[in-house]
Image 1 (cartoon, one colour):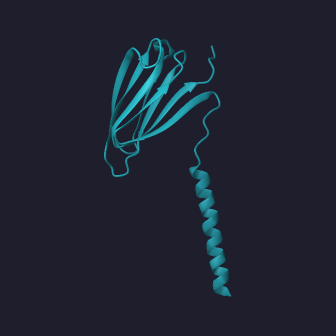
Image 2 (tube, rainbow, N blue to C red; image 1 turned 180 degrees about the vertical axis):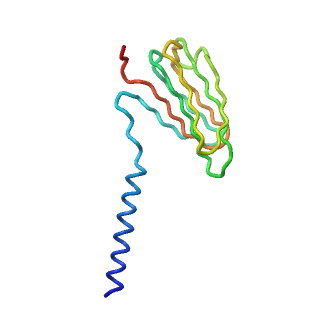
Image 3 (tube, helix red, strand yellow; image 1 turned 45 degrees about the vertical axis):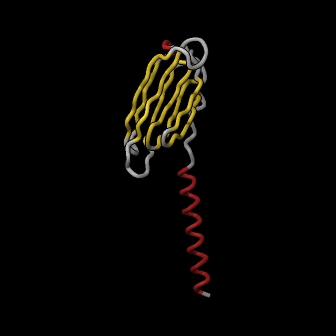
Length: 135
């Protein structure tokens, strides 16, 4: 009977620790005044994202490669009529696992489209804009 009681106690402790760990790993809630897009890109893969040209923009890239290799790639910013017309700027990145880099662009630059092209490794990209314009 002692063995059965100890087993139940061990399982209970494991479950309680597991649940608390799961709560810690839940994604942080973003502030309600921000519109946040989150994307994971691995290997030679790209992603196009429409954004509001009337609002400031922040792009954050985090290296997520598990084997310690570098993540390499670039993203292009576009402005003008329609999406993917009128390339404005191209930014290259080389990021180690766990490293984070971010770039900010004012609303005056009128960026309406981002094309993220990851060339190697794994990244997590975050694109942030305010939901509301507050003067």
